[in-house]
Image (cartoon, rainbow, N blue to C red):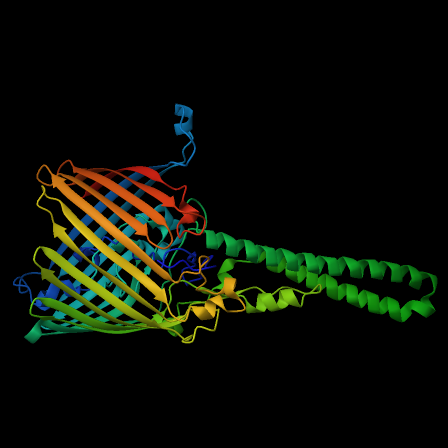
Length: 541
């Protein structure tokens, strides 16, 4: 969950989507993942080769099934103000968010189609293209699987977080609160896989012609601090350029007025000077109007590359298998970071040489990267062990370019175990990243602007995640709690939840989030006052 320095305002897409990118979360994208088998259209490695087998009912008539989910979450944010009376409670900011999901499944003898529509206020207003949350056409031909559509594919053996799952971006507009697969943004892609009977070996290939980027809030409780910083800086540049253009115009106007008076008194002497002054005034007035129009119509979208192009296509391959009781895998990914880097070089140069001239805006780019990964899982006594490791190769292998990410390594490892206490299960995992050649960052001329810069000069970012769960009353009542500790950055997040299923369709829940940060350099310090309690109602059908 590496926090980038100055990322994001919004990304311009063909659907005019507002995709803010910035800050926070390494891949804060991966913490508290709640991955399920039904979440991914593509069969995950944990499903084995059964995913390729022809269903016994394949010869039956094609069937269409529908399913849906309606949710209403009401949330009250608890700030650090002392609560001495009901009025203090009444002042807490409250949100009430309804959402509705409708799924359709068609199963034929060879071809099947899965689709899921998602309706919520934010999706309809800001990201209408994501009303189609998933749409996959799948051809299952014995050992060969071919599928295409708007999909979510999960790679890696991790449970509740990953370092190898690179194809889909994340939606952080509601922080990391939604389940992992619900945060993932589906992407058009083609997925092919072939399973060998011997050794349970499967080879996969994926190609995505375009890339969705991580999405962040641009207003409200979950707006990242680095978004606010970048937006403020860009606004300041625009205002400075407008002020400079107006000053130049005003100066030319005064000069032209003075010259007009002299020309009126002595046309023969001041004719040339008057003409030159009027020409300069016209030029300065045109320049001012141009800057004014630019500022008035300026959109942060203009700073972002268009990732709906082949330049930002993604591709990868993966092989998985079983050796005895050990499930193994290796993968390769080619694509780009889902959060932008900021190149301040033009701005710094223009500021240094500025003498009434315009300042240059920063340039945003999604760095190219290649990820080489290995993964494994096995059972050791009562423990279900799992691990992933990744090496990320960028275009800045020596770490000297402050505008491009350095190479890095990432890892995760952990286990889950059923305790001999009621139905309790404990899941413990540790994940981390290490930025290579970080001495080049500390010694760089643009240290604080470097995309990998860390205010504590610490380039290892480790997190320990503990999840406890239990169930009662024949699984009608479920309790769970997730605790995350950011070891180097000093963050603690606690997320408890209690769910009661009234019957097979209706569920009631009470949950919350508590955030504690050591100081302003903590990774989640922008959200330190965003602790909340939440009451939810869910209907599945």
